[in-house]
Length: 270
Image 1 (cartoon, rainbow, N blue to C red):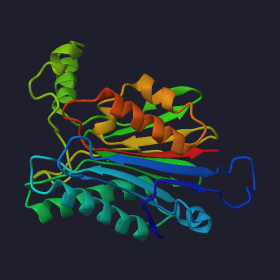
Image 2 (image 1 turned 90 degrees about the horizontal axis):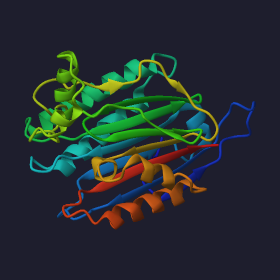
Image 3 (image 1 turned 60 degrees about the horizontal axis):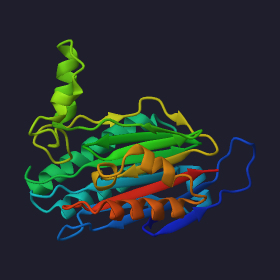
């Protein structure tokens, strides 16, 4: 199951046995932003191999190494490596969602040991098997689904802002502004490599994919800069590669003073 790291790829599956069998087109974008070096990592597996995709599924990942701690690039690369090894060893006849969850926990522990709890990475990933999507995420990276012209956020941000908002709800308030105004609001509350076992946002049941669906996974250098309308407009493009081009142009157009590294992957179903 080869690791794919290319700008744009189209994978045409074998001749469909029914109208429910999907084809997939994948693409990615990545930039250093205004940082000193690139600390994001990403990967596709089986995105081009029709037989392997049908038999073992496709996997996509985006990991954002944490700046300000020990070697964010090493953390994100270690997370990718561990996830790919676990994907290869999965029992495709077993519970994919549970195995994906366990894979993320193992990756978190390997990052923690490698960097001695002094470094980390976010993670957002998905497995497409038998036209179904399984996903998992830790941290503040983003996972979107475009379906029938509407954009849906699939995962939850693990940051202090989200925790404060949940606390407000439990206290009987729906005051989101006070949570956003917390000085520590952007700080991560969960990440791979943290001293404690991280909370993993993951699918319990898979999502049945449909023709026309677009899956978009990205680091916060993308999702934290562009609003959903900008992302939705980019998905009006005819190809996954064009989607990525429009996303990148929009990021550059914002000219954020301290633009973070930015990385995204797109999977278009047709």
